[in-house]
Length: 194
Figure: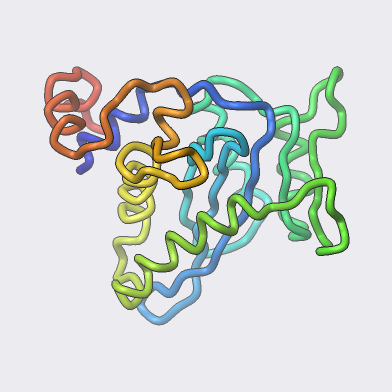
């Protein structure tokens, strides 16, 4: 699975300028930790998934840095919930002279111009798997990476008319493990240490 994850990280998805970010808590050996996620609003491509024991600005920044590396660009707008860890991190990672206010904080159900529903739906998918596993036993970082690959490249999405987010993002890859593994085994970056 690690070879596949490394291989898919070499692909550059064609994503929009609007990304949704959120974190969700998980249980690791009975203790609360967090999985941070950044999702492209248009293609539903999960750009980054990062695990941490805390909810700090630095944790959010690390996740955004991963997302920018996969996308090969910065988003113009980042939609988050009201968590204060996003304020400084979005400003540091996405603000530019031309785009000084890239952060949209969705803090109320009364606000209808934007929301974080797409990433909340993703969290529901992740949580279904989490329940089956009955928490994590120290393998949470690897599981988050594996699930990101599954979500982006294998699982067809009803909202995308059965396409995978990778296909919607212009990556012409069949949604099957066998094909991904065969291609990953031949790819030079899949065979180097991470």
